[in-house]
Image 1 (tube, helix red, strand yellow):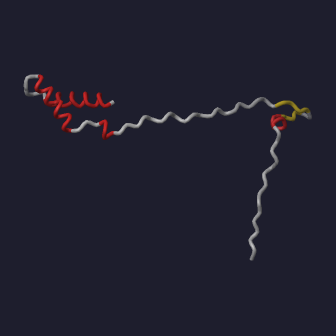
Image 2 (image 1 turned 60 degrees about the vertical axis):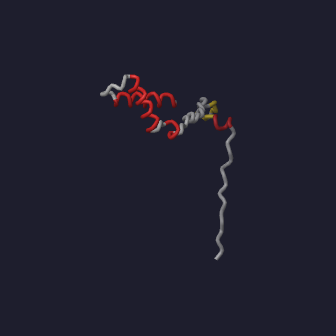
Image 3 (image 1 turned 135 degrees about the vertical axis):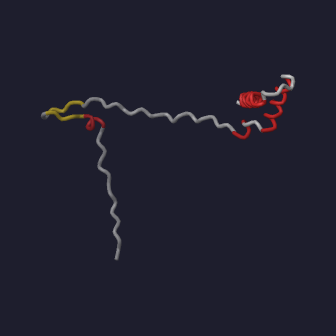
Length: 95
């Protein structure tokens, strides 16, 4: 059994003037201009940041927090504030 392959052909392309013409009661008039779609630009690529390089290590935060503690004269009761201040400063410096 032989298999027959059939190619489909495209319809002939219309000329621009024929495509824009509109027939009205026997008279041919120009069709209104059709607005062309504008190409949409792809959004700009986001700046990639290496998270491992931007994130301070535990040791770096602890060292800076201890420095803040020393600056306050080794006063107790502010460990969390010192830690958060050290994190903020190191994260801000990495950006």
